[in-house]
Length: 251
Image (cartoon, rainbow, N blue to C red):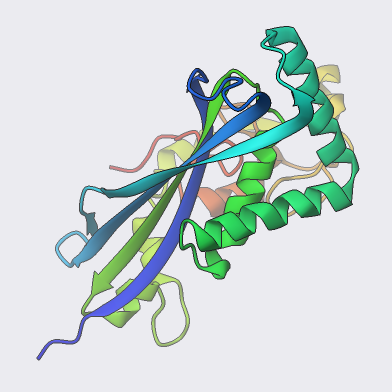
């Protein structure tokens, strides 16, 4: 009997969209609805392509948390509601105690209402808190949570490591840039052009060392790196490490 190995991942995406009509002043207080969606899918390893074939995600259920952000009676005035939410956002941003109370409230809701394991909660809570800091009262916050299970008969491809601990699965998915593209990269000398002097004191995003009057390379997306750093990167992966812009992938 063939043994099937499984690896589980939990991903969260938080957005704010669609007009907030359903909950505006309905309970006589200002509320910001947070609508949670739970999804689940499976991905089976395909040895022909050395990758995983994912099934379409299955929708499980949705729930709504009505977050009250003002103790005052709802006014129905858009400007007043905006001011109250802005005041609430300042309180959350400026008071670790209030922020912790809200994080605990979200954690309890994720556990008791949505059945989210505590190990999957921290990233979800952080994403929601980030959205709350820039949210507007006339739109609904949507939290989409996807539980994905990877299945394979080959343990190494499931976890991405061989017996020596090398990340074989990750490297197998990367596409290097062609040698001709790497050789044609533009070289920049800081002291040869006054427009480049602003780079002095900045760090290479790969090695984190400060730029000096050394060999520096500019990618087509206008991001700068030490030449030795970016050449080694492009020999493995054709995308820019900073913005993920593709740079002449090898066919």
